[in-house]
Image (cartoon, rainbow, N blue to C red; front, top):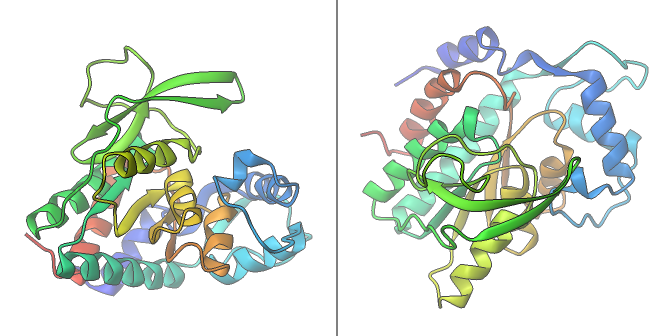
Length: 271
């Protein structure tokens, strides 16, 4: 099993934690937009609290380890690797619990280029443990508002992991998918599962709108989030999201493999 010390060293070397590639400017911009209730950064969350920018900086300092100093407005953001490790342990505990029950799960990502492999390994292990890895609304059209206007995507699944892709992009079931923050894909998938009479997932695993969108609808949701994704941490603070792991969500895909091994070992799902 990968030791905690070895994983911590990897987190720092790969810049998954420590000084990350996300800039302070990017994060502060997201906090300002969240405080203004911009749907692009709410990710499907409907927060109950006021959550001004000062509140968000304090929350992110607590949950991620970013600077709590409002005068710090530039440079690289920082994630405390201890918080990442604590998050991974909690994440693994929820994955292990659903595996023990053999309960249905839904996995989805808005970062398919980076995180597909991480989630796909979880899907494989959960399936082997007897969980139904759900794939509702395969091929369903999803219209998402982007900074370039309204764009049409199709919901697809690769190795049991949901993503969206532009119509006509390669062939179904293949990479790559599109980057998105939208909660519409998970809403589409969950609505289709309900319309079909179930089963519905007992746990949703993912990032961005997959976590916040599912959590807002009352499903247990866990996921990964960067310092410029305050919605997941607000959701966790308000009890809508179960677990959030703070880390850089846009590094090379192979850098997440040690995290996969760690989570599967902690969840007693190593193959």
